[in-house]
Image (tube, rainbow, N blue to C red):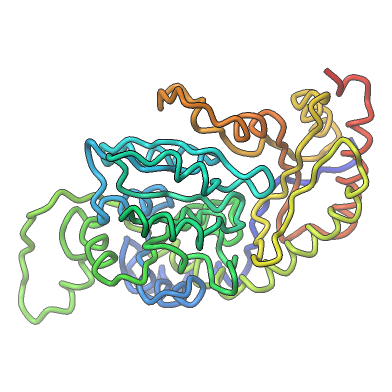
Length: 379
């Protein structure tokens, strides 16, 4: 093995260390403190909304969105099928049932026609997923939601910096949830954010994310000694100020990180575009793809497991794409999602991050071509 090219890699450095040092000096390391409030203001500019709540991860942000919109036992929420199961889990945490709808074959987000077909008298909302960051069809989804009196949530876990018809991810639904996990476009290792144009929704979520009371920083400014009253079940879903400090630097880096990922994606498109056994990801003309991942579709005759093993043996990080949620035993869904199920077996993610240079991408592309030509890569 001549080299290693990681599947994902954060872009962090001295600026993030300095930001963490400043938090250490401040004495406020815990959640929902001054750094979190400052990050929320910074991220509002990315998401195109006025109301942002920093959370411990995207799953908790989704849970808060669902709770504040009223999802609960006996309800059904239609969910785009091709996603990490945190999306479906967040629905189940409320007591509601996720109903998974099939996806578009080109950009892998939920098919609006499948959403329409899945609506029942128990449906209360739609949870669309921006798969690998490219936004779903929000105009069509909004029309369906309005027609049936439903709310709409954007799972924007991978979407920081993405756009849909000129509008930023985060501003496309009643609420949106972002992830800052280590493989995302901007990261503090973990973390998330709930965003919305609705102040009442985020204000309610802020209460719920601190066990059902106002965060300590609100009480800290009081001239008296307020003793909170617990009148609603809440959770500890707060982001720490250490993570928030890192995220403030990452938000500053975002334009250059997006540019670097788009450049790497362009190199892949050029180098792999003529390979018959592969279908490459597409970026629709009316959207900006943040390229959280670069996922290729293998021809049916290729053995994905053998391909992955051979890539890793040659130092190329890889993994499957994401999950066809409806086949997971937890959810017990009998209704098939054939497009999602097929791609779940054929997708493979190859290295994508902002630290890739042209030599890295050329190496990965050559190894991919060499590996899929091997007899052992055939079924």
